Length: 226
Image (cartoon, rainbow, N blue to C red):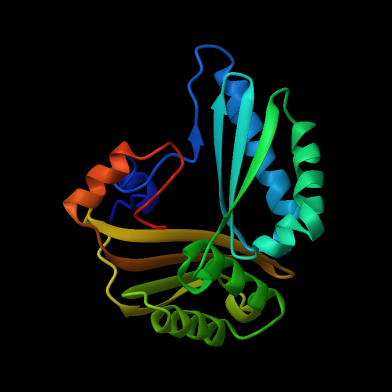
């Protein structure tokens, strides 16, 4: 049987940085669960803002929450009112002083997590899964992706037995560490069961100089995928 490795974890420390950047000698479990709680809260509260990932950094008693979003205007709000309300809400979940930084995703069409969530929304609106997959792949290729693979699993179309369907265009070299592979996962909770959506997007190879730059980059920053 094939042994599958998570594309993000496989490139951790080579192309990708950590999602949580801090060190703890005591209270590791508490801080870890705090990070997970903060991510879940933000994703649920502003689910319409197109959030791809949330990188959390801690220094002493300060916490920086970096939100990567395709719609920064929705998150910031009029004169920064929305982001300030969000900061206050997040501050209630932790004892640390909270700072929120908004990072814009320029090409949402080639962000794997946003593609997966887009397909999820279409499945919930009862759009045919093949049509949703094909449209997402074509859009990603049009905006500069070198390869896209989408896999959906579950009771597709309300069928009695679950199955898996895959749509691929271009090339997705999963075993090549120098290949920048973006990975996204979403779950569509349909009336007849959960449908899982996995997306892999290949955006190109990274030169050795860029890999060295990534290793020296500030925590949470990813110049390769910027």
